[in-house]
Image (cartoon, one colour):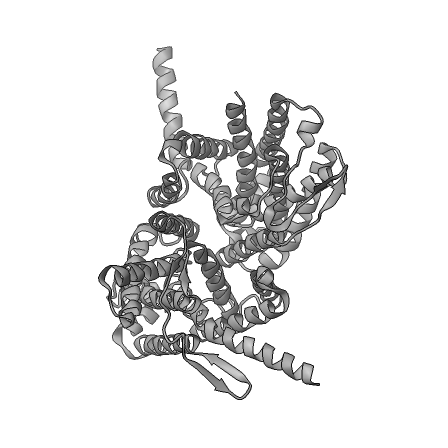
Length: 303
Length: 298
């Protein structure tokens, strides 16, 4: 059962990570920095609960605030360049964060035990849930409350004007600019929101996994983050969730018997999907097809 | 005073070594820039293909006991073939204006090549034969490592050949024409796909040489070298200005020198961190790089 719950947790956390890239993707930006924000959120929240003894919710809150601020600061120079250059900048930022935590040491002694991040050795003993007697069910519930909350907010925002503005910038920056949308402000807002969500995902991840290691935050994680919304398509938030379930549930867990060859499949899968469906698996074309099939099915049953 | 003099010699020595090694970054940067110039797209899998070329040359060197000189040629050819394959799988059939899809596909290509290498070598580093490593020249208080000098000259020669091909042959003319205006080039009867795939193959040739150079200068070949080489190549491309070959050369040598200075003062653990920070300084103050044209729309 714990194995199953862990998988559910992973899916929840990766959905949040995917959604953080999803918002940016709506504005047409491809960011490989999400793994970096994820790492910052994870380390910040873990330092707050382990070293400073904060509660989990304030720690998550502050971690989200800090990653949001960081995303804002990074977005400022990074968004001066567009499209492909942004990819390079964010890729570099992600590596910068990883190398920063590779060198990051802050050890304190608590009750005779040394805790805290220890550079290359990682940051172990993040035992907030265990110390406060949380059951696995409660942890999973906490994670999924956040997932559902974030999905609902993005879903709702997508129905309002802000969603239309984001998509307008994504479709054509120049056209969006001519109808009076401040493109830079929109992109900065998306970047910041993406950072906040990635920070949330990271802080949940840190406490669920209880052990942070800089190896977990490589470009692979960043690629996962953008692969979810790209494979799932940016039509709506559920595409991301489906893609996470597909990749984490089926590809990573379901094909465990293949061993490391799964990662080979991951690379090949991205290439194949991009060739066959450059706008994502669940693009408007596919959705129309699914809807028509459903309608046909329903009308048959009625008649 | 003596202390200062000693320090000065040490620092300039490490800058010099770094600049010599930076020729590998310059070559990788030129490859990225060539492909960007021709198609306006980033091929993230490029450095991975370059290292894969180095791996295949090492395999042939071990299997057939080939002479050392062959290594660079084999590596170049293998990387060129790989470059062409990357073009076929990640760029050829993806709509021209969908930059992000092509980019994403090449990221997939990067992981695919990376994983294949990890599997083939079980992730462990392999010894790579270095040339002239016993040669050592002393110039005043400085010493110049023979293998680094050799690597530098190989880089110089390949850049020269590339510039010749680009500016003195019909192939180069076609490449530059497609880069400038692909519609007009097509109207003149040039095949876009043929030109693009040749560009990828030529960039692959350079990459293969750069991969073998990196391995020869470091002395080992390891899968963990792929990602740093990719990132540094991209940084060099951005600092030099996307699409600018002289920019890539200068930025490559500069990054090589810079990272060695950082390593001298801060140690190897923090080296790459500062190289990345350098990129951000450029993004803030000179987002178009040293020689880049102002990009109005991409």
